[in-house]
Length: 310
Image (tube, rainbow, N blue to C red):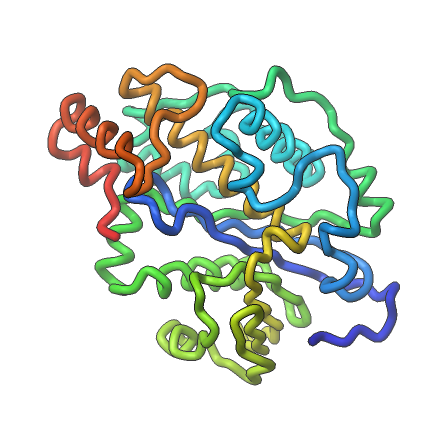
């Protein structure tokens, strides 16, 4: 466990979580939140000790498949976006703000032409000023950065062809965000990738130098790694989005982006309900309905555009 010299000492924390690891259709998302906070993040950033007027938790629990659940999730995400100085008015503006390379891909792959754009909010009646930053200020939290990797199926499939391992693909995205955002001395709180306890073989495959293994187990796996000369402490944590505020924020943003995508896909195929028609998961029969509708609308290329290999 990290030991901090003083409760008032400032520490930079990067929280990363993934969304949609398992679906057949739609993007995989890995989202990062960087903040500066006071004291030991394992104590000071626990959700159980915080009270918000927004629901910050595991994004799947927040975005329940009904209008009120999606509205609550959308409001929570926009409160967070405002705290980080972002006020996107459309889906493409949101992509441009947190993942400009994903917006380029959305257009380049033809998704933008087929799925289009949408004004925000979709599910909430309105987005107003939420002043979450004031609460963060009182808690000693300084928002720094929001970033995401939004990997649409064509890109996902190319990465799978190259890496031949979905867990390795996932970790590669985590590492790319750390390489972009991390400074020496940062602490990273990361959602566990599946049930992985030992990450050494993945680090080796990605060329990440592990300076020290600080513990490996079901609930937590910790490492001191070196990225481009910067020493960063990584903690992979089970159910991190239910326990730690910044991981919950990352999870919510990723979930929001994916649900907008699924809404746009449903709308483009004639399903006009506000809640996306299909989840995109294998166990959902409507996922296969969407694929069938897409093939009728766009031809065989629809599978290459929408369907993941794994």
